Amino acid sequence: SQQGEEDPQALSIQEGENATMNCSYKTSINNLQWYRQNSGRGLVHLILIRSNEREKHSGRLRVTLDTSKKSSSLLITASRAADTASYFCATGRETSGSRLTFGEGTQLTVNP
Amino acid sequence: DTAVSQTPKYLVTQMGNDKSIKCEQNLGHDTMYWYKQDSKKFLKIMFSYNNKELIINETVPNRFSPKSPDKAHLNLHINSLELGDSAVYFCASSLGTSGTNEQFFGPGTRLTVL
Image (tube, rainbow over all chains, first blue to last red):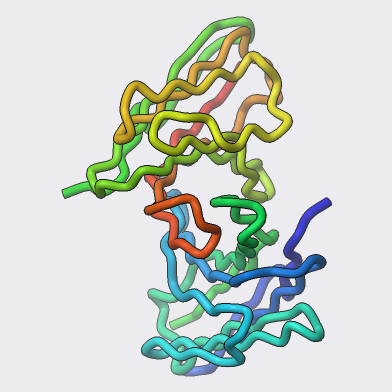
């Protein structure tokens, strides 16, 4: 069964607005990562949050993790048209070795 | 310099054919992966190699055979291609085998089976 589920599946906002994407997972994890995929390209790592962390920032990105609810959120502030992409969460577990399990992704469209 | 490269970028072929996709990374990583992304963008791991040794083999048909001649290369050979094999295949690499490591992805190979 799929580990991660993201919502919304698609999000359309105006430039300058904030975008929030959510990810839920089913089993215990060691860390959760967010990746971005531009159309026709490979995935690019954005940020990693460990299971003992609750919040992490990187530039305009803010990630939260709630292990009791098995959920994470990715907030992009002051969005730009260049942020248009698909965003995926991926969970890692120490016992799974290098395996990452990806969610279904959220397609974000930022309109100029 | 390209970190993780794949060839070819596009591959169009007939059912029943055999084809290969090549992947190379110049990051000095020791773990490499193959993922399949379907038309709904769902990304699923297929294989993982660490220092040329297979460490993850998800229930993939044995028509798919990965080969790692050295830790910088991981190739994927597919025999007797089927329509359902049409997808985008991504190669990735990471340092070590811990699930806490960031993975670096190649640009993908779009395989279309007619």
